[in-house]
Image (cartoon, rainbow, N blue to C red; front, side):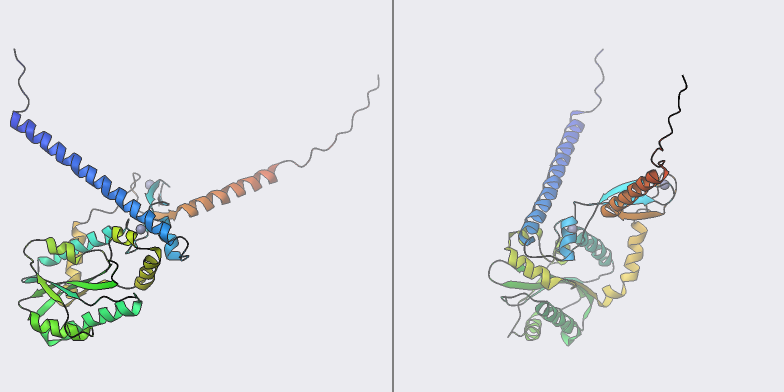
Length: 320
Ligand SMILES: [Zn+2]
Ligand SMILES: [Zn+2]
């Protein structure tokens, strides 16, 4: 008797299609990770002889050094890779933007009329903290202008690029607004950034593509890796400690509610096999120092417990 077929040809085709798609996804993910690691190496190489700061030291440790989570109860050790969490680190920036995207998606539930606005300013030759601050202040002033009176709230994300024709600053804004007068906005924005008029664009918000734009990196890892070392250094020094993402109005006031929604979706905090959820975190250096201290202590104890030089015993006289 012929054995009964387990799957119909359609199901078999579906399974093989899904397996091929998974293989493609895994491959793309691996390439992405390799690209990020490569970009980090390129940036590191270009900055090595130019920078000697704690920030750069942490950047070098990122993805290389280990961190240890130690259970306070049973001492079980779990190993992780250290992450520097710098906005411009190719290994860390995607995590920051992913987190932002999740928050914005939660906020979109409350937005009635989303609009995606892009504000730009003319290129300039040298990037400084003052330049970035002036741009941020112009954005803050715009929010207080009459033209924004019908904007309920939103967020702004600043992006910096340089394709060889000077530095270019622009902002992506996600607004909850029924209407914005673009002609007037161009003049108001232009005046704020010291120009006759500013280039402003309003974009479609019907699909989620704008989320990608609004929660973009300050700079892409691949873009930064292609810059000369001096330019990377100029950028890193200028952006240090500055914020590139702001929420205002309804989004700012909803932050507590959004946090509560996201916290309810978060997985439970880790629990050790022994049942304890209390942990200590130690760096590789901490562990190595502890090991050295322990060895020194053991050696000194051994030395103390060793009997002092054996005394020469008198040779008994033999009376033969
Ligand atoms: Zn434990
Ligand atoms: Zn990093």
